[in-house]
Length: 456
Image 1 (cartoon, rainbow, N blue to C red):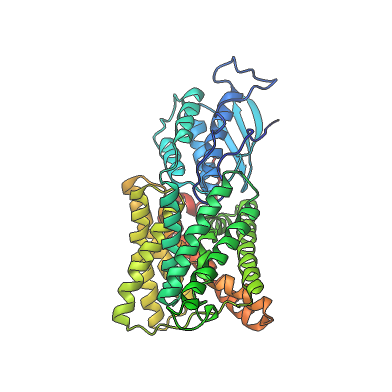
Image 2: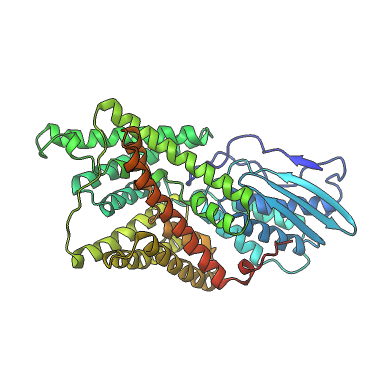
């Protein structure tokens, strides 16, 4: 057995796109059992297949798809079998060839979300021939994919976070001033996060810094107009968008893919992803609550705007598209994928809103909406040759009750244990409903998902 350590130096940061320092080269690593001078040996082929999996895992792909891609690559490389165990941060795989076997452990330097890289890597695997691919071809293609820079500039990235959180604020009934403050705070917070990510710091530390920056900027943004008399009341009267200002920190990708991993019985990967997501949510909630405590202004829920249904429905549809488009850009999605995710979510979230107006429980409405997302994403994925996850996860992120999760934390710290438990209960049920809706869509449209067999 050989262990491949993470290449030295910082690379991709955890959640959204960031500008990268020079990435370490992708290629085989010399071992005592198989020197690099022997082309396409068992060792080199197994390393090439594992490198594909590491690229997909580092880009946010669920573990089942990672295993499927590695197995397909292994067949194209002429290996007899390639059996793997994929967790959130590691890949352990055994390859066989002509009666010999080799087990290896691969660890991506960082695990995050990069839809462009995920899309290009998966598309490359889909186009591989059944036989005849060489390890050199695989390493060369992966190097080309990794060499691609960010699709969106720092300014566009920050604006995407700002517009997304401003849209989420209005969807959570925030007033215009509160939504504007949330957008400004989230944009500056995302810019701060992206800057800190370049240092390859601990994920939780990056989250805490970004949350403190966003929360502080929000308070300053509502204090200025109230202090000058432009807006009536004090800062404490305009806290309806405060929690929305840190919604760009909600780890939507690991939260949804973690639940999908559990459905596929990938418990080690699923539990690890959900633990990571929970840690990030708690970190962001704790930081925003601490800032509000320090200034003595507790966050409060926004009052219902009371808009007519004929006005609120198209408004929510438009805001949903803006919010999902913003998050898709944060995930480094190409424009066509980002726009497709926004359109899908606009349709599905409108259905969810109408069901809510008909007094359907929010969990059931969310379940129905995410089933719709999964089915439409399947059709787009088949016709446009893009990963289904790149469409479905951003489209569902807006249905994740991050606002409620943060509110529950605030209520708990204020001593309202019963209210916090009720808010958290509904939020967790909505998250489960969203994941099960996507899972049902996968089960209904994919023969491989319905099978208990594992890729090999």
